[in-house]
Length: 459
Image (tube, rainbow, N blue to C red; front, side, top):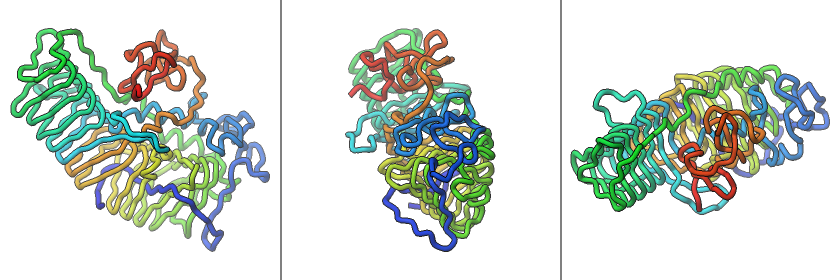
């Protein structure tokens, strides 16, 4: 397929790989190599922190995929803590989301687990659809900064929503829609044409109406609160994280330099480790990743040809790009069968890509607008400043992103549930604790009371 986006995309594919040390190739040995010296490239298990060349954890567990991911310059937190917090929705926008083409979300769990209806979409402001829509989860719209008379949720054409609709303002219907769950709104439900039916209840605040709605569970008047679902107040600073690894990395151990991805002469191979590059640029750029790796880019990613970053089985990547993202050739981002293995964090505000695109990854770009003008399909999740899809768009959410291993200790301090994860996912009294009800969990998670865990779905 051919697509043009105003956001990042990269090439990743998980498949068995055999590498030759041919002319122009660069090989980076794994962290924990016998030739590595503690402090000059870092060895897992030395209890190190960012700045001394060490990585918290044990070399065997980290490089075999069972230990926590790469520590970040934020205390005890590491890259593995970010995915479960940021990618709870298939699509999340800090401002608004507008869809004028066909739109579909569904979910699966890499590893062969059956799919469920947890591919939810969210925006802190408004969400509007204007074509056939199939949402395999819930719709959340916080209603932040709405223009006068603007609905929080607008449903046009026709479609189905597998779970709930939660709107921090009016809901306007200009088509035929069915909601399998409940509808919660702090405003009115206005049907200008077509119809709206809910299998569950319609929850309204006092003084508001839902005239013409068919509600299988009836209409309930009660206090309704819809909070902004996307945590955009405490953004991940990709530039600061990348800068922290400019002098504390595994480049020397692996035989690469900060300039190795600036117009490289041939493929670059990276084993388990943390690698810093000033920028990624050139015609065709190919990177083979053979283990758990962190790639930190201090500048832009700008490739005029094909960008390929592929992974062997068991490998995974956290890619932090401080600047902007621009590609003008063929792109494959991630593995469509295991997109949870690839997490991309972009700090820039200007991103552009054109060419043949296949995406299987989780993309975080809170300062960028994602605009897709042609038909586009991806696996994983998208988190951006705003979203606009004028072509047909489909996203297949990988539930495994919630299970990525982190390193935050249980019972830490917090302001909201967005600060908590792991075994203590709820925030009560400024401390991360286990949940007792779904109200303790960040949307769209629900509480599994027996374990105290906030999960995507009670199966």
